[in-house]
Structure formats: structure tokens, C-alpha cells
Image 1 (cartoon, rainbow, N blue to C red):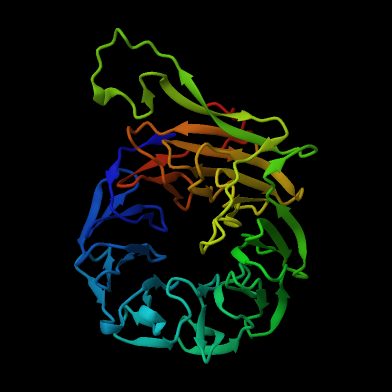
Image 2 (image 1 turned 45 degrees about the vertical axis):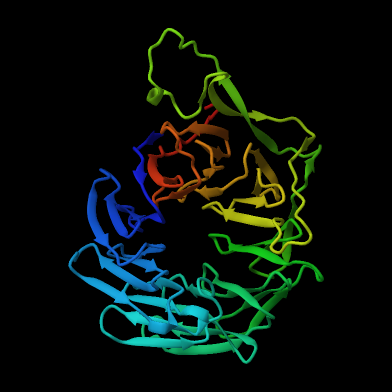
Length: 458
């Protein structure tokens, strides 16, 4: 892997959908860099500090959320002189998103009073009253022709289906939830999954015409659903719950065909490979070298030498660090808080928030755990390569951690003082964006060979 130099950032950073650009928020300035040369190709000045950025799907436009103002500003890369400002006045703006056609912006007002569709082609706008959420509760189908929007009126939750061409309401139906948390179209556009708040375990599958296809409730009298995700192939629906279990439903009968429990201690006859991150001091004699302090890398300790890390394969039984959440505080850190599918839908990775240093990788063909990665620090993010079966994760250290079906290994970031707190792939899987607290860099990732014989060393 090759790393770029570090660049300053004070907010969100993201690749454009065509992977040609990376957008970076730097206070009130929006910096657009070329992903090949990392030269600045556009610089836009906003009216306040940037809280949120999002690219249009065609990569020609980009919006900036200035939520402290509150307003939205949009910019064009092909027409730098063009500008757009959206201000809802006293209603305010709590969130904004692009429509799939890249020519409309959907904004949600403060206190969820209304959702407004703004056209960039003319001055027309369409209002949807009483959206349920600000940043959630809106999902577009795969071809971008329809939008499903959650609303609430008369103490009941509804799903409205809107045409993304005319923005007229094509249909509306009530859903059987006490307090709807979110919804998502299936990858094949045949159904919509809706799930309730954590106070009520309820997952509902609806057809686009409003028929309830299935109602799933694993248990009662306990905190319920925490994460929900469709597999890319559309055949599986994964549900992570507060009871520390991952349940997978199939799309034919909507029955549960797999239940995975995150155990605090793994014993035989489990045949999963368990990799644990360990330090590996390298004793280097630098006493006769004349080096200034700026030369020393960030992970050099004078008393111990240069610190490298690697994975070590553990023998069973293995106990994982477990954190019991306090009973008197809301939003307990327990249950499946991270859930992500691999591109081919064969693997799914999860993190039980009660054991934040362990990442579980489940094999959906064999219906068992394939690998467990045990880190020294809590896992901040884990993302799958969009082109192959490769998983990368970070823990806030200077290292990247990578897993493939052939093994796991660690990569050290050579930038001094750079702690990786978040990471994102570009769409073709050739480049990674790595974020620190006030800086970012990118790393080129070589494609996986046909036969990957990685070792667990650096």
C-alpha cells in the first residue's frame, strides 16, 4: 500500500461516486481534490462552517449542510459560477439529501414539520407533511423511480410512496409499529422492510402496494432491534439485536434460517480462526545516529524501541474483554451495533458493543463463524472492499487491519502522529480515505491476487 501526505480537514470527507474527486470540509471552505494528483481543482466558500456534505450520484453537483445557520448550499463542478442556496426560514433545516436523478434536493425541517423537494431545474418545490425523522426514514428503490418516506400523523406511522419524476404521492399505507425507527427497500425492489424502535422488537416486511408480507418478532419484554441490513444479493435480511444475537431471514419464506450468538468465551469444537493483535517491539540501536526529534516516527518509544503490531493465531478457549453496561443509563452499549455484508453476500461482519474489541466474521454458506479478530482497542469502523472479499478496519491507532479468506494482517500508516479513526472506500476499490481528528490521507490498495497467501505479519 502507498499513502499520500496528510491534508487538513475539519469535518466530513468523501469520494465522488465516479471516484474522480474527493471533497473535504475545511471550516467554511469546501475543497475538491483530484484523486490521482490530489491537486485542488475547485474551492468553494460557504456562508458558515460545513456540517455535512453529499455528492449527487452523477458527481456533477455537491451539497453542503450548514446546520448551524441553518441552510443548504449546493455547487456545480462543471459550472463553478453556478450556486444554489436553500433556506427554509424559521422552519430551519435538519438534514438534506440528493434524489437519484441528481437534480432534486430533499430537505427536512427542524422538528420534522415537513419534507421539501427542491428542483434545480426550475423553482418548483413539493412538500410532504410530518416526516417521521430527519436523517432517517427515507429510502429510494434501486432504479431511482420511487421514494418511500415515513410520516406520522394522528399518533400512527405511515409509509408514503412518491414518484421521483413528478414527486406525486402514488400511495400511502399505515404500518403496524409503535414508533417506527427506519425503513429500507430490498435490493430487488420487491419489498420494503420496516422496523420499530428499540423498545419494541418488531420487523415488518411490506410489498410496495402496502400488503404486510411478514411480521417478525424474536422476543418480547426487552430492548429489540439495533441494526438491519439487506444482503447485496437481496436474498437475506440480517437483524442485529440488543440480546447480542444476529438473526438472518431468507427472502422466500421470511423465516429465520440462521441465528448467531456472540459468546464472551469461545471453546472447542469451534473451528474459527481467531487472530489477536499483539505488539512486536523491534530493538533498533540508534545510539550512534544523529537524528532530530522530527525524524522519529509516532510509534517509536525510546524505552522499548520501534513498536510494530501483528496478528497471532490464538488457541481455544479464548475469552474476550466484556463490558457490562450500567443499568441506570439509556442507550446501553450492548448488542450488535456494527453489521456489514461482503460484496458477494457470503460473509457478514458484526461487532457486539459489549465486546467492542472483537470483530466477528460469519460465513453464510457454512452458517458458522469463520474468523474472529481481537484488537487491542475498540473497533471504530469496518468496511468491505466494494469489488472483492476483503475487509478493512481501524481502531484509532496508526495501523490498518485487513482480512481476506486467506488470513489477516496489519499495515502501518507511515505518517507521523496520524491515528486512523474512520475509513471509506471509493467505488472501484482502488483507494481508501483515512481520517484522523483534523487531517486525512488516502492510500492506494493493490487488487487481490487470484490466490492470496497473506501472512499475519506487517
